[in-house]
Length: 190
Image (cartoon, rainbow, N blue to C red; front, side, top):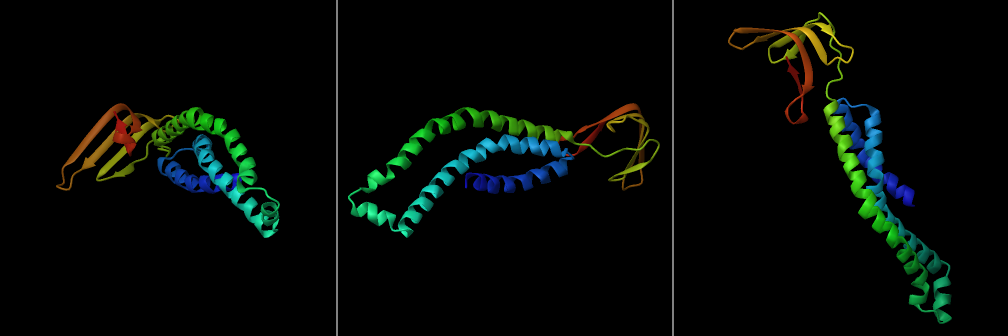
């Protein structure tokens, strides 16, 4: 039951992380790393839910088989029947304290670092050498040479056309694609 609850919570987050990685152009391995860092957080949420559900199922089964009625008829109190559940809860207390106090802060930091890394991945498109590319908003650019990573360019040519008909031409010896302001979009640093 614990694994089922954990997986149900992780699947919802996995869909959002896949969307985030796809929009940022991050590799699938970054999504796996982000989900791995979220497991302790969702495990901490799933553990009390699974414990409560297990107690409910056990009590319902004892009630259905009339075992609860027989125990109460023989003189056992509800407190004595519930003692094993309380003992298990006390045994889980140090584990929960360790999970919430030690493991979760470290993995939440790892998750945020993985999200940051995925957002900074940025550009994964290939720029072909000696091809003119329409960058939108009236801008066209080309590069004589492109490094294999697709981010470093040499012999850069940029032409910008304004709506009024004016044309601005910029050339540079080399350029580099970098994440835009706030991690959104791509900027070309000449």
